[in-house]
Length: 466
Image 1 (spheres, rainbow, N blue to C red):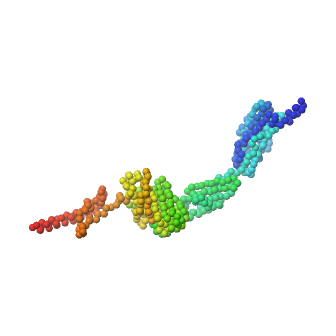
Image 2 (cartoon, one colour):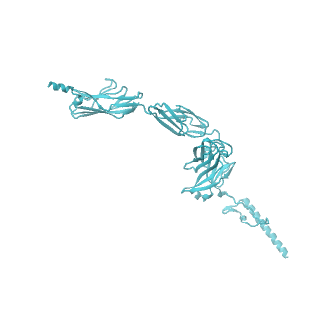
Image 3 (tube, helix red, strand yellow):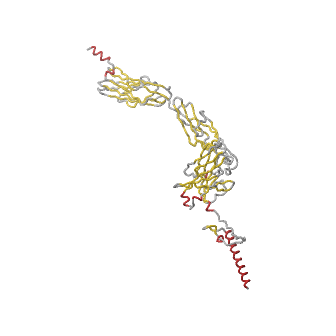
């Protein structure tokens, strides 16, 4: 009997009817982050003074979520990283207890693998280790990229100071200042000068070689304009690529759409526009020189351009400006075979009683409106599509010239250079259009002349008869 009693006191606790297991909500935690620990305790016999002890790495803090009836011992009694739960009441066979606590990892920590250890015990039952999860990896989170810039707008050349605002301890940086996908700087806080006008998208990629990387893109973040307005109304002169500004009053611009292309000699250039209210579809030409990145701007206007002296002739569908490159870019020395594709709404044509074959694209240059060779290319249920050849880029107007064409009244003469009767004496330019006062006076004079001639002729005949 003595031997049996002695054996009962030294039997391993796992064989004494108590089982315990641990669950950890995450395998990896970032510095400053947290995770949850759950401990399940089961017994198949009657026990008293059940106790749970947990040991955590130093400076990891705990907030208790579920004690399940246990008394939690103050950490002041033990070392700070030791946690202890004690159940005063006894636990019957088949009983179960669950403890849940939340652990927060220090924000400054040496990354690595850490262990949570612990055991359960009871009156007359030796401590047994808790099975289940015990390892957790602590590391730093990947960087979160962010940045600022000053100034974000101005005239060319625009010098901009960029500043990294990323979190997560990045150790390298990659900047793209013009949205073309190429890396422009590897500095943390670089300075960049924009040499051409335009609107630029900026991207920063913040990298930590150990913990990962992140990117931040700000679309249309930097706006660069011309220092002084350029006329753009003439196609003469020489010029480079880049991006020209616009002298148009901003109050008169209904829509502004910008497109950038790389321009090289021998490669056909084509700018495509997709704005819902932009009636220009493409601008094309064959460059004679290399210009590199060049900007094209289309401005759909509310009224006649503020930089022209008079409205375009006829009934105008749309007034607009087209600028390509810097001032003087659209020179015969720089490009050839330029053409503009545009569209006209079918409803507008119908409401104004205009046939699609009458549409003309006008260009303003040398202080006058010039009709461009315009061709109808196609149609769909909403629009008719046209292409016009142009020698350059400046203000334009899509119009129907038919509504303002004047019918010249020129007296017809016979072989003997004598005046003969004609429909021009009716005093009208064209059907439904009244003649001007000058034309009416001219026609009246012709009537008087015809009347006088008739009187003289009658008098001569009567005299001969006598």
